[in-house]
Image 1: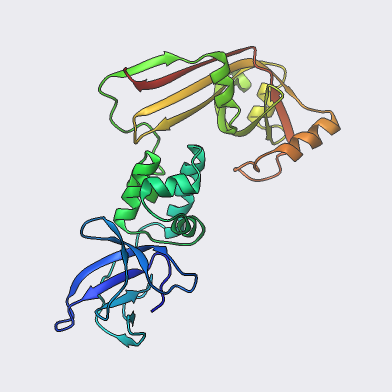
Image 2: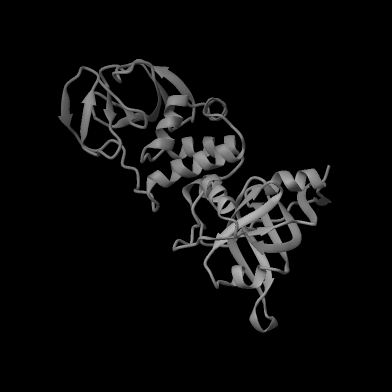
Length: 302
């Protein structure tokens, strides 16, 4: 008997072939996939060390009819467990788990400990196109302070903040140092400018913070480049946690200018964490030097 992380261990009645118990293999003790296994049982959500008997077989992920029995003989039998195919690519779950884990500053080992799975299984989920069981997904969501729905990617096209407000929310001001720390995480922010004809415009951009300046790249003649250069602008970045009904926002105000010095442009390009999500040729760097930075955070009342 050989298994991989994410396979299912199915225990059948020898006489009737009826499934008596099944669970997800969340830990291996041998590199070749031989028993014993750490199994999260679907009926109790408990994880136990299992030495499979002759009434047990492995159902490999994505396989409905081919099973490997404890005695090593393979045979075809009626599907023991058929899980519905998720609406999203299962690989999306692993990517979302990895992003949320890193955002919260957790190691794989600590996340696995909180979710009661092996670090090797967590690595498998993050790196492969895996489809964890509902129990494992719920455990990971609890460990990361989010929801299984969010890890599956449901509602990704909806604006954040549609969850219920806290029963007793507290809105507090952020100090300058905390504002700068949140700004320095880089990512996507919004620049507010006065466009042609005096019309206001707010444009999302991928940004970096370099030597206390907020910098982003855009196209020549675009709204951020044409309207921001030589003017005072506002730049906002925020985060909303729908699962916990919390969030924060930081607003920076200051003059903007186009970076023209060739060495400075090359250095900004070298240090960039990511390419602009919008694509295309975006080689005009705009720098904002904040003169005022403020922020707010919503938390539960003490």
